[in-house]
Amino acid sequence: MAMGESGREEYKIQSFDAETQQLLKTALKDPGAVDLEKVANVIVDHSLQDCVFSKEAGRMCYAIIQAESKHAGQSVFRRGLLNRLQQEYQAREQLRARSLQGWVCYVTFICNIFDYLRVSNMPMMALVNPVYDCLFRLAQPDSLNKEEEVDCLVLQLHRVGEQLEKMNRQRMDELFVLIRDGFLLPAGLSSLAQLLLLEIIEFRAAGWRTTPAAHNYYYSELSD
Image 1 (cartoon, helix red, strand yellow):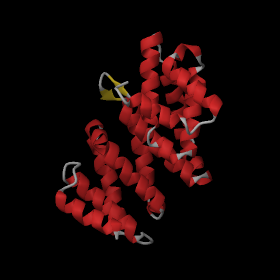
Image 2 (cartoon, one colour; image 1 turned 180 degrees about the vertical axis):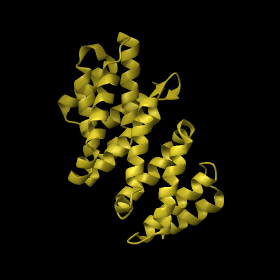
Image 3 (cartoon, rainbow, N blue to C red; image 1 turned 120 degrees about the horizontal axis):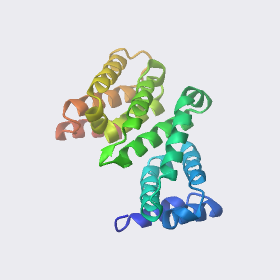
Protein backbone atom coordinates (compact mmCIF):
# COMPACT_ATOMS: atom_id res chain seq x y z
CA MET A 1 0.00 0.00 0.00
CA ALA A 2 1.14 3.54 -0.68
CA MET A 3 2.06 5.88 2.17
CA GLY A 4 -1.09 6.99 3.94
CA GLU A 5 -3.24 4.13 2.64
CA SER A 6 -2.71 2.03 5.77
CA GLY A 7 -4.08 4.94 7.79
CA ARG A 8 -7.22 4.92 5.68
CA GLU A 9 -7.61 1.16 6.19
CA GLU A 10 -7.27 1.66 9.96
CA TYR A 11 -9.99 4.32 9.83
CA LYS A 12 -12.43 2.07 7.96
CA ILE A 13 -11.71 -0.87 10.26
CA GLN A 14 -12.95 1.22 13.21
CA SER A 15 -16.55 0.74 12.05
CA PHE A 16 -16.38 -2.97 13.04
CA ASP A 17 -16.62 -4.61 16.47
CA ALA A 18 -13.32 -5.34 18.27
CA GLU A 19 -13.11 -9.02 17.25
CA THR A 20 -13.73 -8.23 13.58
CA GLN A 21 -11.27 -5.33 13.70
CA GLN A 22 -8.60 -7.79 14.82
CA LEU A 23 -9.55 -10.24 12.06
CA LEU A 24 -9.25 -7.54 9.38
CA LYS A 25 -5.96 -6.16 10.75
CA THR A 26 -4.49 -9.67 10.68
CA ALA A 27 -5.80 -10.22 7.13
CA LEU A 28 -3.97 -7.07 6.04
CA LYS A 29 -0.69 -7.93 7.82
CA ASP A 30 -0.53 -11.75 7.91
CA PRO A 31 -3.25 -13.11 5.60
CA GLY A 32 -2.13 -16.72 6.00
CA ALA A 33 -3.07 -16.61 9.71
CA VAL A 34 -6.84 -16.12 9.20
CA ASP A 35 -9.76 -17.69 7.34
CA LEU A 36 -9.83 -15.41 4.28
CA GLU A 37 -13.17 -16.73 3.07
CA LYS A 38 -14.66 -15.62 6.40
CA VAL A 39 -12.96 -12.23 5.94
CA ALA A 40 -14.59 -11.87 2.49
CA ASN A 41 -18.03 -12.65 3.94
CA VAL A 42 -17.53 -10.18 6.81
CA ILE A 43 -16.65 -7.38 4.37
CA VAL A 44 -19.62 -8.14 2.08
CA ASP A 45 -22.05 -8.38 5.03
CA HIS A 46 -20.87 -5.03 6.38
CA SER A 47 -21.03 -3.43 2.93
CA LEU A 48 -24.68 -4.44 2.53
CA GLN A 49 -25.52 -2.73 5.82
CA ASP A 50 -23.31 0.36 5.65
CA CYS A 51 -23.42 2.44 2.46
CA VAL A 52 -20.54 4.66 3.60
CA PHE A 53 -18.32 1.60 4.01
CA SER A 54 -19.51 0.09 0.70
CA LYS A 55 -18.15 3.17 -1.13
CA GLU A 56 -14.62 2.48 0.14
CA ALA A 57 -14.50 -1.28 0.72
CA GLY A 58 -12.83 -1.91 -2.64
CA ARG A 59 -9.64 -0.32 -1.39
CA MET A 60 -9.56 -2.67 1.62
CA CYS A 61 -10.28 -5.70 -0.57
CA TYR A 62 -7.51 -4.68 -2.95
CA ALA A 63 -5.08 -4.33 -0.02
CA ILE A 64 -5.95 -7.83 1.32
CA ILE A 65 -5.59 -9.36 -2.18
CA GLN A 66 -2.18 -7.72 -2.55
CA ALA A 67 -1.11 -8.90 0.91
CA GLU A 68 -2.24 -12.49 0.24
CA SER A 69 -0.49 -12.56 -3.12
CA LYS A 70 2.74 -11.24 -1.58
CA HIS A 71 2.73 -13.44 1.54
CA ALA A 72 1.18 -16.68 0.27
CA GLY A 73 1.04 -16.42 -3.52
CA GLN A 74 -2.63 -17.46 -3.39
CA SER A 75 -6.03 -15.92 -4.12
CA VAL A 76 -8.36 -17.46 -1.52
CA PHE A 77 -9.73 -14.06 -0.51
CA ARG A 78 -10.42 -12.94 -4.07
CA ARG A 79 -12.15 -16.23 -4.90
CA GLY A 80 -14.29 -15.99 -1.74
CA LEU A 81 -15.14 -12.36 -2.49
CA LEU A 82 -16.18 -13.06 -6.10
CA ASN A 83 -18.23 -16.11 -5.08
CA ARG A 84 -20.13 -14.06 -2.51
CA LEU A 85 -20.67 -11.20 -4.97
CA GLN A 86 -22.10 -13.73 -7.43
CA GLN A 87 -24.46 -15.17 -4.79
CA GLU A 88 -25.80 -11.72 -3.95
CA TYR A 89 -26.00 -10.84 -7.64
CA GLN A 90 -28.14 -13.90 -8.37
CA ALA A 91 -30.52 -12.91 -5.55
CA ARG A 92 -30.51 -9.17 -6.39
CA GLU A 93 -34.27 -8.86 -6.99
CA GLN A 94 -35.00 -10.47 -3.62
CA LEU A 95 -32.45 -8.16 -1.99
CA ARG A 96 -34.06 -5.09 -3.58
CA ALA A 97 -37.54 -6.22 -2.47
CA ARG A 98 -36.29 -6.88 1.06
CA SER A 99 -34.18 -3.77 1.54
CA LEU A 100 -33.75 -0.86 -0.86
CA GLN A 101 -30.80 0.38 1.18
CA GLY A 102 -29.16 -3.07 1.06
CA TRP A 103 -29.62 -3.14 -2.72
CA VAL A 104 -28.12 0.34 -3.18
CA CYS A 105 -25.21 -0.67 -0.92
CA TYR A 106 -24.66 -3.82 -3.00
CA VAL A 107 -24.52 -1.89 -6.29
CA THR A 108 -22.14 0.63 -4.71
CA PHE A 109 -19.96 -2.22 -3.43
CA ILE A 110 -19.76 -4.22 -6.68
CA CYS A 111 -18.93 -1.03 -8.62
CA ASN A 112 -16.25 -0.22 -6.05
CA ILE A 113 -14.76 -3.71 -6.42
CA PHE A 114 -14.86 -3.33 -10.22
CA ASP A 115 -13.05 -0.01 -9.84
CA TYR A 116 -10.24 -1.41 -7.67
CA LEU A 117 -9.63 -5.02 -8.71
CA ARG A 118 -7.36 -5.49 -11.69
CA VAL A 119 -5.99 -8.42 -13.68
CA SER A 120 -2.92 -7.44 -15.70
CA ASN A 121 -3.88 -3.80 -15.06
CA MET A 122 -7.31 -4.29 -16.68
CA PRO A 123 -10.74 -4.38 -14.99
CA MET A 124 -12.02 -7.89 -14.27
CA MET A 125 -14.03 -9.18 -17.25
CA ALA A 126 -16.07 -11.39 -14.90
CA LEU A 127 -17.55 -8.28 -13.27
CA VAL A 128 -18.43 -6.31 -16.42
CA ASN A 129 -21.84 -7.86 -17.15
CA PRO A 130 -22.96 -8.12 -13.49
CA VAL A 131 -22.14 -4.42 -12.99
CA TYR A 132 -23.99 -3.53 -16.20
CA ASP A 133 -26.99 -5.64 -15.13
CA CYS A 134 -27.16 -3.79 -11.80
CA LEU A 135 -27.03 -0.41 -13.54
CA PHE A 136 -29.69 -1.51 -16.04
CA ARG A 137 -31.91 -2.43 -13.08
CA LEU A 138 -31.42 1.04 -11.61
CA ALA A 139 -32.50 2.56 -14.94
CA GLN A 140 -35.90 0.77 -14.99
CA PRO A 141 -38.95 3.03 -14.54
CA ASP A 142 -39.81 1.73 -11.05
CA SER A 143 -36.24 2.46 -9.89
CA LEU A 144 -36.15 5.92 -11.49
CA ASN A 145 -39.11 6.81 -9.27
CA LYS A 146 -36.87 6.34 -6.22
CA GLU A 147 -34.30 9.07 -5.62
CA GLU A 148 -31.95 6.69 -3.74
CA GLU A 149 -31.69 4.49 -6.83
CA VAL A 150 -31.28 7.41 -9.25
CA ASP A 151 -28.59 8.86 -7.00
CA CYS A 152 -26.81 5.48 -6.90
CA LEU A 153 -27.03 5.07 -10.71
CA VAL A 154 -25.52 8.50 -11.37
CA LEU A 155 -22.80 8.15 -8.72
CA GLN A 156 -21.68 4.78 -10.07
CA LEU A 157 -21.63 6.03 -13.66
CA HIS A 158 -19.46 8.93 -12.54
CA ARG A 159 -17.13 6.43 -10.90
CA VAL A 160 -16.91 3.55 -13.37
CA GLY A 161 -18.85 4.61 -16.49
CA GLU A 162 -15.80 5.41 -18.58
CA GLN A 163 -14.09 2.11 -17.70
CA LEU A 164 -17.29 0.15 -18.36
CA GLU A 165 -17.77 1.78 -21.74
CA LYS A 166 -14.25 0.74 -22.78
CA MET A 167 -15.12 -2.86 -21.89
CA ASN A 168 -18.48 -2.91 -23.72
CA ARG A 169 -19.66 0.20 -25.56
CA GLN A 170 -22.82 -1.40 -26.94
CA ARG A 171 -24.22 -2.06 -23.48
CA MET A 172 -23.42 1.51 -22.40
CA ASP A 173 -25.31 2.81 -25.45
CA GLU A 174 -28.28 0.62 -24.48
CA LEU A 175 -28.12 1.82 -20.87
CA PHE A 176 -28.22 5.45 -21.95
CA VAL A 177 -31.24 4.76 -24.18
CA LEU A 178 -33.01 3.65 -21.00
CA ILE A 179 -31.75 6.69 -19.08
CA ARG A 180 -32.88 9.08 -21.83
CA ASP A 181 -36.28 7.38 -22.03
CA GLY A 182 -36.60 7.70 -18.28
CA PHE A 183 -35.75 11.39 -18.45
CA LEU A 184 -38.16 12.08 -21.33
CA LEU A 185 -41.08 10.20 -19.76
CA PRO A 186 -41.01 11.76 -16.32
CA ALA A 187 -44.20 10.30 -14.87
CA GLY A 188 -43.50 10.35 -11.15
CA LEU A 189 -39.89 11.51 -11.61
CA SER A 190 -38.85 14.08 -9.01
CA SER A 191 -37.20 17.31 -10.17
CA LEU A 192 -33.97 16.17 -8.47
CA ALA A 193 -34.06 12.84 -10.33
CA GLN A 194 -34.59 14.67 -13.64
CA LEU A 195 -31.67 16.97 -12.88
CA LEU A 196 -29.38 14.04 -11.99
CA LEU A 197 -30.31 12.11 -15.16
CA LEU A 198 -29.77 15.15 -17.37
CA GLU A 199 -26.41 15.75 -15.71
CA ILE A 200 -25.17 12.19 -16.36
CA ILE A 201 -26.39 12.31 -20.00
CA GLU A 202 -24.37 15.50 -20.53
CA PHE A 203 -21.41 14.10 -18.55
CA ARG A 204 -21.10 11.13 -20.91
CA ALA A 205 -21.69 13.28 -24.01
CA ALA A 206 -18.73 15.44 -22.93
CA GLY A 207 -16.44 12.37 -22.85
CA TRP A 208 -17.08 11.48 -19.18
CA ARG A 209 -16.03 14.98 -18.12
CA THR A 210 -17.87 17.81 -16.44
CA THR A 211 -17.53 21.00 -18.42
CA PRO A 212 -17.13 24.22 -16.38
CA ALA A 213 -20.52 25.47 -17.59
CA ALA A 214 -22.22 22.18 -16.63
CA HIS A 215 -20.52 22.21 -13.23
CA ASN A 216 -21.73 25.74 -12.50
CA TYR A 217 -25.26 24.93 -13.65
CA TYR A 218 -25.77 21.58 -11.91
CA TYR A 219 -24.01 22.32 -8.69
CA SER A 220 -25.76 25.67 -8.23
CA GLU A 221 -29.09 23.88 -8.89
CA LEU A 222 -28.26 21.08 -6.45
CA SER A 223 -27.21 23.49 -3.71
CA ASP A 224 -30.45 25.43 -4.19
